[in-house]
Amino acid sequence: MTGAKPQRIIVGISGASGAIYGVRALDLLKAAGVETHLVVTRSAHLTLSQELGLTPAALAEKATVVHNVADVGASISSGSFRTLGMLIAPCSVRTMSEIATGVTSSLMSRAADVVLKERRKLVLMVRETPLHLGHLRTMTALSEMGAIIVPPVPAFYALPASLMDMVDHSVGRALDLFDIETGSVRRWAGMAAARRGDSGSP
Image (cartoon, rainbow, N blue to C red; front, top):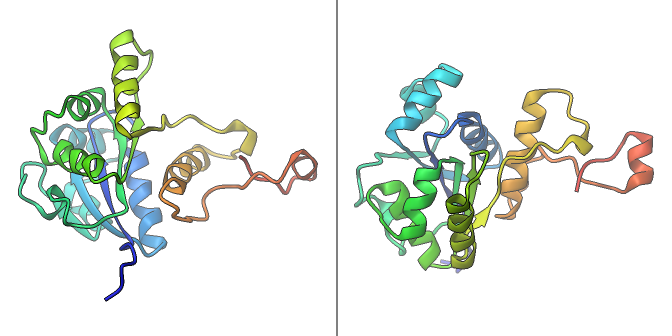
């Protein structure tokens, strides 16, 4: 046995608009050979159906392991279960607030709390706008606790040709934070390369 970190990541999908971000994360992680542990809130299933027409069964096929959001005794609720961390995509304000206050009322917030206490990467693709002062203070508190706030902001300098290009770039950049290469990010090579048309983005 070696002490190498397992290529394993927790993916959470909450009920905010933008369910495609979590779905594409699962697709890209599977293609990269990374083991995924999926947890989905009840409201997220409604969003998945409304925005993508995706059933729970079809979603489950994209993950290595699926955990019930009510199962607070699941493997991912323990710090002894080693992972690279957790990505919540999209992350609703409700989920963000639960994590910030330590109110672990579901497996989603419990798993995130564990990731923070174990000093692993917690990446939150918070999907909300406009933001009031309470939202901003919550984000500040989470950042101080070690979380990384990554709103899914389109990278127009990457010259996306489609909406899916924007989604894949945002998800790929979020997964960069775990040092997972997905091949979905056009890497910036400088302005000269951009003028030649062979560049990526920062």
